[in-house]
Image: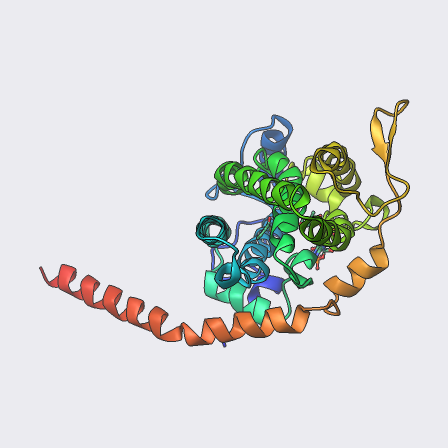
Length: 337
Ligand code: BYC
């Protein structure tokens, strides 16, 4: 495994972008140019100068996002061989494949910041980078595939649509396509749950049980409350995040609460009700202690997800080696010609 300490402590393998110019007195004038671009809502591109902390924040968030897409293939992948019809199987395979694609765009976006995908994957395996808490819950029944589409993809879209306007160009542009696909994913989850909810009593019960289990983790996946969010203020000042975790949580609840009525399913929150005065839904207090536990590695499936990813990575080593050998051979042939 390669050493990855550089990413956490310095400019992993790229020319320094100059945030901390050695021994120079006074503020770096490039800092003012960078800030002027941010203030004018312009995009920062990979070759532009950027403060080191901005670069590190983006690497942290984009890598975590990429890892989430890839680890997120596991809970749903679990149901591909057991989908109840050929149509459902084809849809689920396409969805899981889309998630692999999202992971790849995101690793590419991170690489424009001068890190290497292999380094990021090593950091994930060493537990030094995170992935979304939501993928540490098990998929116990077929209805969970619907609940993931409706709620998890719903929360993901709520978070990701504003990321299309992220100040860092490659991340924002990757999000445009990701959001189009996620929105399709959410609809398939809704349609799946609708069919179950309006099917036999046993199917309805299965759909309700899935919603009971996925409702709160989906609300929690939008991050800790604003009072405890360490990165929000700085990320918002930099135009990386456009809304705080709690603002996005409210948007998400406002979107899914009326959809639950159409589905004929009851969210497991006795405090969920429309508040005419606020123009929003009121909802109960999420269990942020549980979020902390799951993020800290103690969710129902953390160990299983990490072990499976590591095994798949090791099993695939020969593919990476073969591709590298082919590329080297091809480069040698081209150079000789
Ligand atoms: N899980 O200061 P905060 C998908 C961490 S995949 C784990 O608020 P920030 C899909 C946070 O990293 C969708 N960790 O942080 C795929 C930080 O720790 P570090 C995934 C979490 O970054 C397959 C600490 O808590 N989406 O759609 O300002 C199938 C303090 O938090 C979580 C993204 O990744 C969590 N839930 O805000 C289906 C979107 N929440 O890093 C669907 C991009 C917080 O200091 N990411 N933490 O050690 C973001 O928008 C932001 O990173 C977050 C957190 C809103 C998640």
